[in-house]
Image (cartoon, rainbow, N blue to C red; front, side):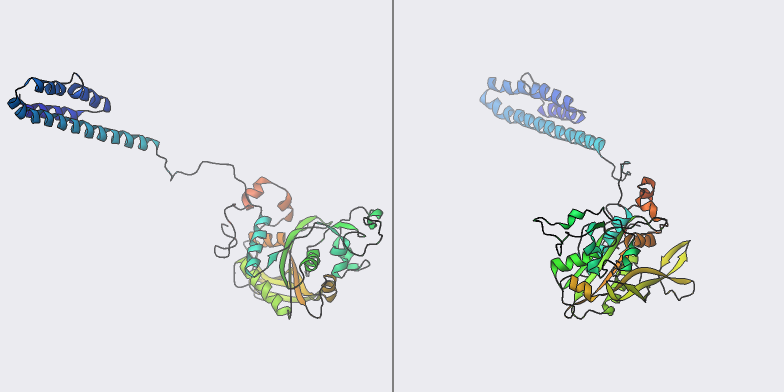
Length: 380
Ligand code: PHE
């Protein structure tokens, strides 16, 4: 028998097998119980020892060669089947993502985050206080006693006066401090947080207090609720130079330009002495105000940006601090106004309409987190 020819034929057919079923059929044909090569192996028993010695290795060799060929053909076909399946299941990552419902960050929240980022870098912590305030924290402690005319300027929303609120638990009347004995109101500015923080934390202090404030006022640039951010620094030997540097550094970082020029104008707030109104130079570009340059430059003007000053002695005292030991500066600025200036909106009322078209246009991606290295207004 020509084992070599039989082997070649078998190997050729195995190499031609186009799928795993054909490989299995060939395995049965050659090596199955009734298989041709199995049959050859059975003939060994009937052979003489001499014949067996010469035929045996050839038959075994044939079986090994066929077994190896079947195994490798099977591997090749299985590999190809896997490749085909993977190719069929692959995802093209370069395709645009499917349209998904998206929320966006309101410009006020974005700007508050930007401010917190900028001031955190200058070592300021964030402090908060209640929006429902008493008149002691909102006015009296800020050097505006009951008859003070400045109270009238604030267009305050008062809660109905409950005369029994002058009675503290235990029946004590005219309690000297705390909320008892005070008229409740919606805070008209973030300045009461100055008092609360001084009383709670003492000095030195470096805080910002962002939040909602309320005044009975409504037109294109005023809404009954708006946002302010208060800044307060208390330490020894603090002077107006520190205030000016802090505001300049903050505004350069916020507007992301170096040519911010400030003009400090004498002003009056009961809680600061001296008080300064801070103006910044701006020009009109493409119909909107763009902050930058000096207001005295050609094509530029000054605009009032914020109120500030050195903390009044009476305010330090109300905060439980010795004004001969501690000094400080404070400032208050409208967050909505900062947002309008930076992102070019012109009607404040749209901020609070909740119109999704406005939000889709002016809102920020939740992934555009303000960082000083990446740009506080990144993504715009
Ligand atoms: N509280 C003042 C306002 O609302 C702003 C201000 C804060 C001024 C701190 C000076 C110092 O108008």
